[in-house]
Length: 117
Image 1: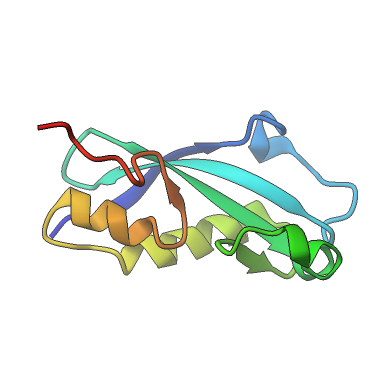
Image 2: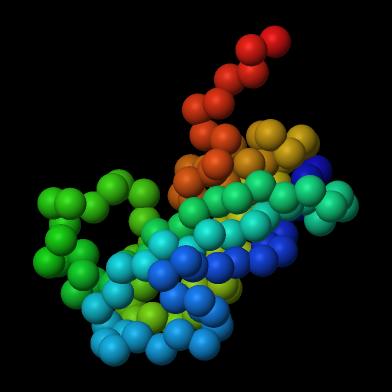
């Protein structure tokens, strides 16, 4: 089984994300890029996670993509725990299957890619 782990994360709008404090933690729309790879290998793939608060969801519901995580308020430790718990449920026999399972909630960089071979 390939057990996925978060190796790194960032957000281009809030760099460094670890130091960012929003004006209103209850009105958030943020995308975080996660570097996730199998625990027994060095490689990673990129997955983008979309996190919004209830206030934001109510105001912009008609514009939202269907794949997002709803959070009560912005808290990076809570987001990291949420994603860690989710990806732990995605272990599969090989990395491609694992990445596809993760891609059900996080946008995978290779989503929809088909090899020409």
